[in-house]
Image (cartoon, rainbow, N blue to C red):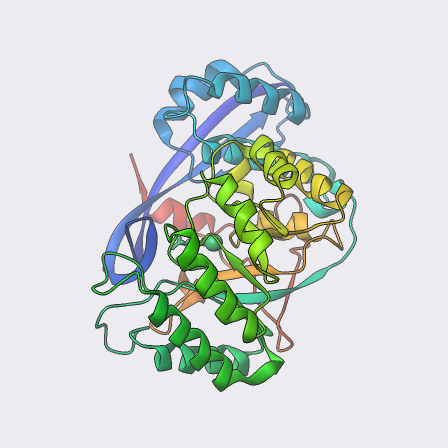
Amino acid sequence: MEITRLGVRVFTYTSFIRRGFGHSHPGPPNEARQTLFEIETRGGAKGYAFGVPADLVERTLKPMLIGENALYREKIWQKLSELQRGNGSTLSDAHMALVDVALWDLAGHAVGLPVQKLLGAFRDKIPAYASTMCGDADLKGGLTCPEAYADFAEQCKEEGYTAFKMHPWMPPVPGAPSVDRDIEMCVAVRKRVGDGMHLMLDPYHQYSRQEAKKIGRAIEELGFLWMEEPMREASVSSYTWLCNELDLDICGPETAPGQIWTRAEWVKAGACDILRTGVLDVGGITPMMKTIHLAEAHGMSIELHQNGAATLQALGAMQIPGRFFERGLLHPLIDYTKRTPWLATLEDPMDKDGFVHVPTGPGIGWDIDWDFIAANEVN
Ligand SMILES: O=C(O)[C@H](O)[C@@H](O)[C@@H](O)C(=O)NO
Ligand SMILES: [Mg+2]
């Protein structure tokens, strides 16, 4: 399974999302670019991933990967991890992750099995939670006030979701961040959906300890399932302090750098009650499974960050400690089902009971729309 070729195809699509201050928001239709990364072996086996920068393939990945055995994912992850030191700005955790995802996709296609089965399957469907985008300033029909969040939570409940996670208003929205407004939103949502829906909060990421504790105490009384990233995740001691102050479960880290090693430190420091990991956050499925097993060995739950078929494959290979699939990010004005036009079928359709099913196709399980890519390819 010697890697003989790496390829990348760049194509355009119409996006309705704009990124601002590290968050996704609804935006006017705009032309965006996506890449299809391809790894091929001497025997013709192929694996894919979306989002690898074209220049990284030429500059870094080809010299690293050509000639390697595509089945040696652990060896390749270790090599990329070593290369990352001093090159973090050009070889990000996400870039590493996409190489690993393509290698898992290739392995699955080579044997005609979904990655879930290669990892060791446990379950074929996972309950989803609706993960909202951040609040809006004055967007008509948007998440502009606590009642708008309550309306959206009610809509999601009617669609079958059994859990709802809010990202409230964040800078530069005028008046954000606001502890009191975040609490007002949580009260309005709980009042609207009743006790039959799990609720979680993922507020402004740079609150002080006292602000985080005030919010935590308030949502404890509302029976929230967890709070995520209320403070800078670089301040591990603040999270240890917060976990000791609250009964509410604290879930993290999400964005803190350091991949599997940071997560081990958070467990050791008692900085989270529920661990957090993610394919892009820790450098791929290979290291993500290490964090899942770390949590399991400590009797801890772990929640996987972000949507996507690769996340679903891993969730299908564990019972505890991962409870939910983060479906999103959602917004009242965004048609979530139209966000990946390069896939012929949605990677994470949800059934009426609020479950998302692990894709059964080989590899990651994407149903790639080759005609769309060809029709929108750019040089
Ligand atoms: O707007 C975003 O992208 C969110 O802040 C992002 O990090 C989201 O994926 C998240 O926090 N999930 O838990
Ligand atoms: Mg989060």
